[in-house]
Image 1: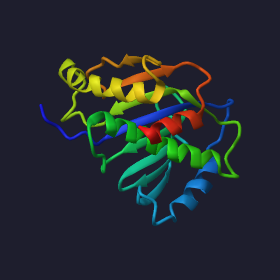
Image 2: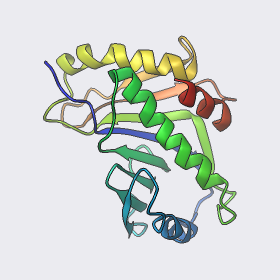
Image 3: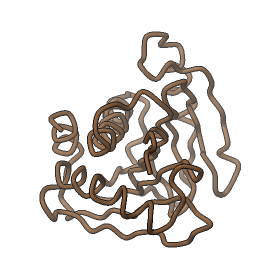
Image 4: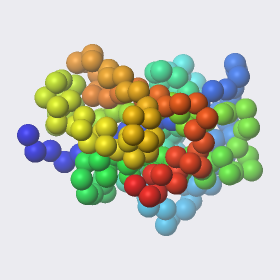
Length: 195
């Protein structure tokens, strides 16, 4: 099977106190949307914070979307890549992590960023949002797992994380990724840029 891996979604989980509100992100993302030179080519901003499970606050772009996401397994920052990934599959996966980490670093540097939202660089969700080319089955797993493992070794160190595959064929092909606690956003970002 030959397929073009583009729709790569990576989500860094986060924790926040009960009743945490997403309002500050409307302000931050509203300002970001005005940046016409950003590689993501931002085009829209949507507020889904009223939904118990959903995209929360979503900044949509031609290259990819960035969201404060409320979908399973919980709160986090999601980068949903759409296009412009090149190189080998493991390079594309590392690039998706780098894009997410670039945006996460910019986000926490914002003066209006709510400090009670704590990102967890050791906890990720990873999905391929393309069920036509990459259905959630063993054929896809055999094709993509070596590239995913190679990418994760670059980011988390050789054997530095656990991968738990979601085997439900009704859902997208993907993994929950957990690394050792103590991993910092800066360290992971540097590894992604070097990868």
